[in-house]
Figure 1 (spheres, rainbow, N blue to C red):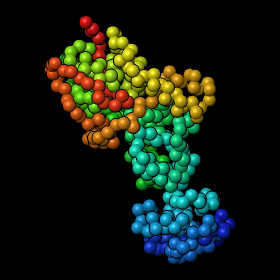
Figure 2: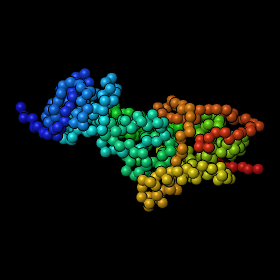
Figure 3: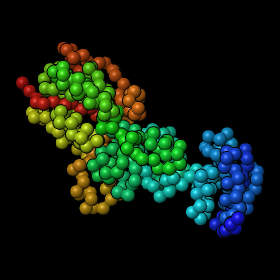
Amino acid sequence: MAAVTRTTTFAGANVYLSRSLVPPEFFDALRDALKINGAHVFLCSDPSQNSPSDYHVISSMDHEKFEDLRSKGCNLLGPHCVLSCAKEHRVLPKQGYTCCLAMDGVKVLASGFEKDEKARIQKLVTAMGGILETRASLDVNFVIVKTVLASKYKCALNVLKKPIVNLSWLSQCWTEHRVVPHDRFRVLPFSGLTVCVTRIPAEERKEMEKLIILNGGLYSPNLTKNYTLDMPYAAVGDKYLVARRWGNIHIVTRKWIDQSIAKGGCLHEGSYPVEGVPKSCNTMEGLQKEHCHQEFSNASSQHVRSAAVDDLEATVSQSITSPVSVGNGINNEVFAPSEPMKEEASNVNPVAEIPRWNMMTFICRTAEFH
């Protein structure tokens, strides 16, 4: 039998290893790895031992003893973390809790999430050895967004050009203790958008409905103040006039849909203007560009800023309310319907009561003004 080579990688570390805190299939391997690498191993659990050189091995954040140990300031390690450190001859990390090293050196940017969701993302990323960035920068590896309405989405798509994924990707990385392939977790081009069309031939309407749904959006035959996209074939009729008066709707051409699908991302609506529609209809465009420019400029060089500013805008999603789950496997956040306007409604006297940051899009071929 070959002699075991002992190292001093974990020298000075006091590691508490209890059978009640780790899966039985890991116990022997953990004990051997710790001893071989010079750790002082205690086969028990003692929450009172919380000095910088003390470590406690625990199966996961879901263990019933996890919060108790954490509240006492103990350094917590997952079985995968200990075994990886032993294999790679790395010292044991001291950052509260490290589950594994799956994201060691990986930088993640998250956008469009509520405070509690962001806190959860922070826990998962750091527990896997990664770094959760707060600002956009070119060295980010992955961007996690809730929907395409996230404030950093367009910046990630047009400038960072890094994988844009949903939260399920992070959960899968956590489950498998590795950075899983991201293709099946991509955020679809219309994720979080609700689309309403009007005065479109039946065949084309069905085609557009199918494309919208397949690419993460929610199709609706009715126009409401809280919908995200409105897509008439021709800019005539009550829907178009109401959409203009509400002032929170992007007015774009059908080409925006096709090219967004081709690129695999929600393209800048301002690049698809409708003939005859005054620029004042896109009142938020300048503010969006300025917001995203400031966001990115603080984390990148001057030459990148000047080249990218025209392609950037941040679609602010903080005022979105009433999340709705869309049955397409994607965690979509859409506006809840309110006061729907039917296709043939007339004598409408709309009042722009919705928050100005609730952006919508209106897709047309031509505009007719009288």
